[in-house]
Image (cartoon, rainbow, N blue to C red; front, side, top):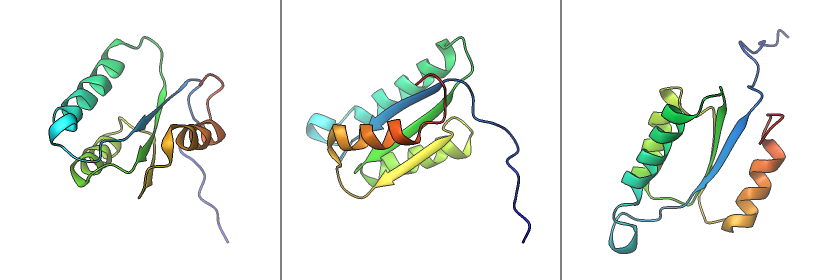
Length: 104
C-alpha cells in the first residue's frame, strides 16, 4: 500500500480559537460579522507565518458554512466540528492536544 506524503509541514506557530455561535439573532446577531473581522485582522496584522486551528463548538449552519469556506480558501489549516457545545475547557483540551506548532 502506498501512503501519501504531506505536501508541506505545519508552521512553527499555531494560532488556535474556539468558535461558538449557536444562532444569528438576539445576543448573537452580529457574531458572525465579528468572527469575520477577527479572522481578517489576524491574517492582515500577524507578521509571522502561522497555521490557524479552529474548533467549532456547536455553531449554527451559517457559521459552519463560513468556516468551511475559509478552510477551502486556505485561511484555516485545521478545522474540527462538534455537534454540541464541549464547553470552553473541553474544546481547549482538544486544541492543545492536537496543535502541531512549537508555539501555540
